Image (cartoon, rainbow, N blue to C red; front, side):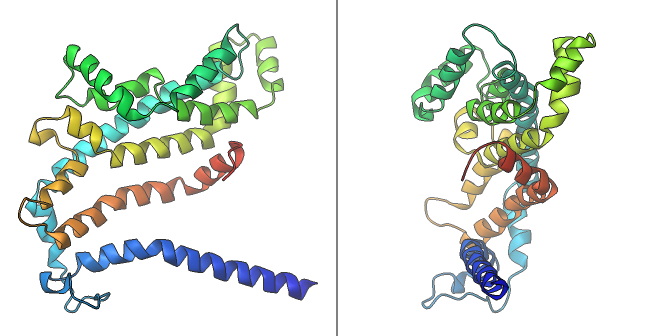
Length: 277
């Protein structure tokens, strides 16, 4: 029995390793392309290991465009988006899960329903609204909705956390005279830190990779985020594929670093949120 179980574990691990290598294949191809010369890009059969390795492509990539300026702009937008999300969404989720009030379930249903509306439907009305507010040409439209709980999926995810918490702690705090906000901030909120980190990571990734939002609302080249900056390697007549892949590889590093920093809490968040993959 033990031998059969051990063989089963080995087979499962082999399958998982093969699947992992399959998903790493695009990343390896991006790294390979970033280190190639122009003559090796489109040869047949494809060259997986460049010879010679063009390390200079990374230097050319960060000097061909204002790379670090665009990275700084992206960080600014991403941090503000995450900050607004982790401040507003837990508060909304708490009100939709731990407090009893008339119309709560209806409002939660409407919140979930918003997730079904394609972004293309609301894109033009949002642009008109921000234009009349004089915010087009600034970073504010890229993160303003986060400060007002405008992230329905994040609210839903955090609500799952709050729903799994026992009410005994809250009742004990209320008996001791704690206000509702004190119960939320000092009793409930510390228990859902994995959920908050999970939500923060999702929003960071979404904001970091957002292309359409900056393209709509930013008009000054100095304000561009890195996703728009990467498009500068593509012109009407030529695409600098090696430089584009080198810059894209550098752009993925902050996301990977953030993920590994919060990896343990992120896995806990997915496990305890009640969402099944």
